[in-house]
Amino acid sequence: GIYELLSGSYVALVVESEPYVSINLNNPKTSIVNNTGINGIHMRKVKKIVVVPLFRNGRPLSDSKQRDEDRYLQLLHMAFSEHTFFFSLTNDVTLTQQSIAKLPQNKLADPLHDKADHRFFWNRDVVIDLITNNKDDWVVPFMSAFVDVRTECQVEDVKFTLLFVSRRSKYRQGCRFTKRGLDDQGHAANFVETEQILIFPDGKITSYVQIRGSIPLKWSSPVHMKYDPVVIIDPDRRTSNEYAAKHISDLLDIYSDNNKNSGVIFINLVDNKKDQGKLGASFKETIDSAAVRQKSNQHALTYVWFDFHHECKKKGKWNNLGKLVTQLDEMFRAQRYFCRLGNGVVTNWQCGVLRTNCMDNLDRTNVVQSLFARRSLIIQTGKGSVLDTGISVLDSPWKNFEKIFKTVWANNANAMSFAYAGTGALKVDFTKTGKRTIKGMIDDGVNSCMRYYINNFTDGIKQDSIDLMLGLYHPDMALPSPFTHRTTQQSLSSNLTKGFVLLVMIFSGLLVLLPPLLPFNPQAEEVQYSVVERNLQHMRLQLLIAVGITSAVGLYVTYSVVKKGSKIGEKLVIHPELIPEPLPAGRAA
Image: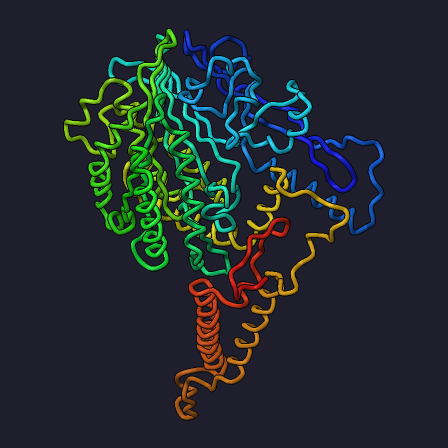
């Protein structure tokens, strides 16, 4: 795409990519080959993007403006390096198989960018001038996604290729605590469309689509060094409901079948207590209200609140997920899946979609989505009768394929988590093995600590890079620098230094003030201790007490900041600077 910065126009070019998926639908063998063939599915993965100036001599810049220009370029390079992009020169990577089948005949020959789903057309805003001037050969839709392809899969006598695609929406795109809820167009933060495609030897294709996204209300939880930032639900419920209505209307339209029949099953996995409980209750009120309005349109809206942590927190309780699957099984099967035969005839349409969320739409969400994906795959392969034999919802009878399936979903969990939260997913051991392990719990602890640091001290910068890359922020010579630190901003390093100095002073003071801890008995001293031994014993005990008290003070202060947040925390965290989200009243600005 083209970026207009302070010194002039730059173009971002893909200079290196690799073939990633190449499937001929008449003979669906997948390998790393050139993009050739007709009526196939082809994708290339971007390996390197460079940003090149479109000028020989740019606009003259002052020293301060030049520093801003350098910062913009750094942000662009950062954004490109932290995202995984896919594209195709022959087919539209942004559309599901059902969406492709729904295209009118007169649209099939249109340029790819005309048919693309704008939600997943990440570079659209930075190629809009090329589109406007009909430079179609220069416009290729790019999507940020996780893609996996597994050939030679087999379930009993059924052989197929599994193509797995999780498309990340460009709308309300950002980081874990900088982007929550809905925007004024009804777009949800961290919205992902996951399509599980099966390609059979006779050219038949089946596809099942699920979605995830932030709770569809107007809400936020800005960081201030509290481990779980306070959830703030916008008090303007009327506006929030209007945003939600747009969101729901879009879902019903996009995920309808060929006769415009549709429905959405909302699965809410948040805790039914404290801030999450309040958010879940508001969510339910919104869906109940929307369901009443949709009755006349025969669009089914279903809301299910399954407190994942409560149901599965104890060892051996993960089988409780079966209660959720059983509750929704009839409605899930009624939504069906998409099927197109090798001759192009569509025999089945997916009617509606399952929308899952937790707070971040990562760990819990991925576990639950994988359960329904497994059930759909079993039905797509014609083995649906197995589901009525009482098998566990956490497994399937085909061990070799089950290993492939769990690996794909675990990789998807990690990819989505890295993109939104900055670390690998939690609970990924369960997704891979079907049970929790000690190593998995340790990994979860490490990732949670990493997330805490990243979300508080680096996500603000990452958000700036995303806003610039997507073309949402436009540098302007006439405006002051957006990189001027807010007056209340304090650096983490300076406060850590202050804290360290304070702890050293406490430690030193204790060493000076602590009295001798052993009673001095001159008559017994020569028998029991030498002078040196007695002094060493005194020093050891004094050091232990000083270290203990100093450590306790440090741990208490750390605990207070992490557990409750603080005014100091508000000043330390890094918020976005290019397009800052409004902070709630009373928060540092």
